[in-house]
Image (cartoon, rainbow, N blue to C red; front, top):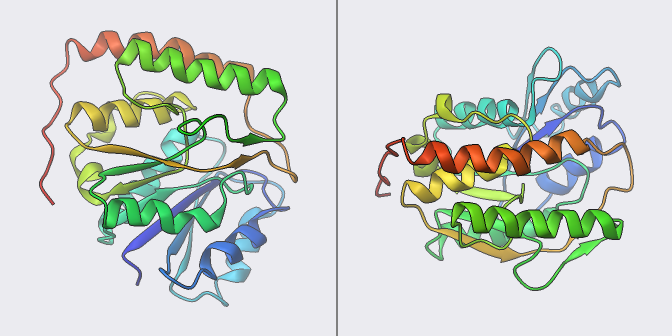
Length: 248
C-alpha cells in the first residue's frame, strides 16, 4: 500500500476514466493508490473502473454511490475511507485531465518534505495559467478567487482550486459534519477551515487545461454558491470555535 491516496469523484466520465487511472497508477516514483467515488454514472464509468481493478490489484479502489450527491460529500466519503486505512497523504483530483497527473509528485513533495499541511495546485500564483477556457470564465474564476481572499482573509491566490494534497492530520482535525457546502464552495470551505485550525497552506504552480472529452459539471448555480457562500462562511466563523492543529 502507498502512503498516499488520490481521490477522484466521477459522474459520466467514460471518455476519460481509463486514461486517468492509467496515468495516475503508472507514475513510477512516488507511487499512489487511487480511489474513484462514482455517483451512479449511467454511462458505465464504474464498470470501466471495476474492469481495471484486475490490472491494478490492491492499488485501484471504487466506492459507488446512488445518484449525484455532490462534490463535497464525495470527497468527504473519500476522506473517511482514507483515514480508516491510515494513508498519510490524501490528494483531490479531477477525472478530466484538467489536473495534470504529472503534477501529483509536486503536491506530495510539498507536504512530505517542504512543511506544508495542505499543498494547493494553483492556477494563479504565478500569473494566470489556464488553457482553453473562454476568457469570460477565466475572468470569473480569477476575480472570484480575489473576492474570496478579500472576504475571508485567506492568503491564497487560487482559493477555489480543487487540486490539493492534505496531510492526514488536517483531515483528522476537521469536523466533516460542520462542512456545509456540497458544490464548489466546498473547496473554499475546506481551505478556510484548515487555515482557521492553524495549518500551513502552500500554493504550487500548475497549468490548468480545460477538458477535451466529456461534459463539464460547472454551472452558473454552482459558481454562485461558491461566491455567495463565502459571506455566510465568514459570518459563521465569528461564532465558531475551530479545533487546533495537530502536530504530526
